[in-house]
Image (cartoon, rainbow, N blue to C red; front, side, top):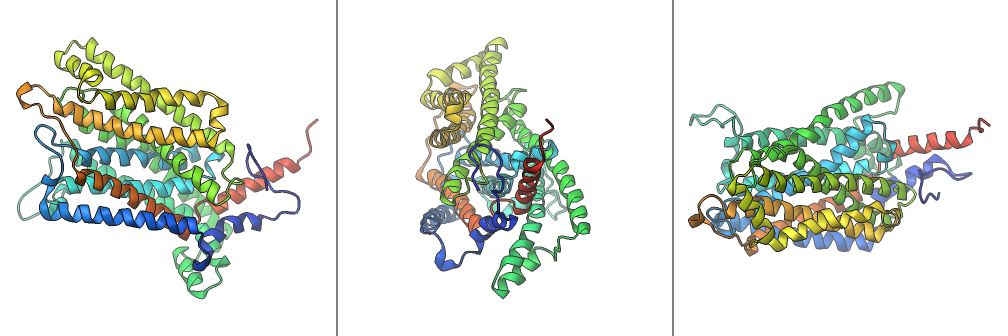
Length: 458
């Protein structure tokens, strides 16, 4: 099967079982036959996770004073990383839900992987507000429940909205991901050779028998879940943006933040999908399923979102001067020439300048260049959150309270540790479950085969 630029199609004499085998045999491989590259990557991820656990353990025991936070910069790496990881998780929902409702079949090869990436990114994001509390063992005070101390959350606070948004987003994303996985789990059950694996996949697939009745119920619920997940793409990161827009800090108090944050989330999410998908595609020889057309489509979406993010940068500075607020004008000028100016210029380079290369098809078809651009976008989006949070807080209304922020080794260790945890979960997912939707890929291949077999109307 060979498709360099279009959808996968079957060659003469090739059966649909070969499509299933190529995807399903990756998680069904015997442990002793596990590729060395996977073992090396998983081992490196575990080592980084150990660093993360050591850093978090010290924070729990000794407190958040280990971090570089100060007055006035009370929000440091924890909240930066929180917003960054939440943004990365948005691509999965967009690819899976919105493109499914729009009948965009190019999502088929990447939706399962993107959905799993969403779950792992949201899990990472949810940890940071708890770490930032100082007393993480009482995080449940944020949840509205009757308690003996008479403490109730302030429902007018967008920080409480985050609790509802994240839990809803994580729950719906998990149910949507698992719903799409059920037919493939049944396929794994039927292909497994060991009895314990057959029983395990049989339980996880809820007795799926691929009957017409099962498919009818599945399609109805799957599209309903997609319809429920679609508003979350807009609502979750809009709420995160309102965490800042509701503040009066210069650089935050802006109505552009909700849509600006949503575009940035999709931008960074697609960048992360490309960052992980390109090496995976090469390592497991999945070029027949994840074709150049898929990578090209993702690059175009990333370019469109990047242009919206660039427009947001322009509007931020324009409105600062148009509003004639001296504090906003000072904040905008400080980003270009202040202490954090090198970081601001770097994020502009990564998020605005570099992505202009994606206008050219020759760049979009060069996987190495595309991977480097996606990696730079991930760096640039993290720097964007750093500038929004740290630079705005470090110089607010009273010059006597100004204080620059410097991360400590504990800040850096937690950040790197969550990246290691994310990669470890990705490696486990690739090894244990089908990373590409088997049943959707067979449907797509079948449709393409039928279209190819039909005689021309001429």
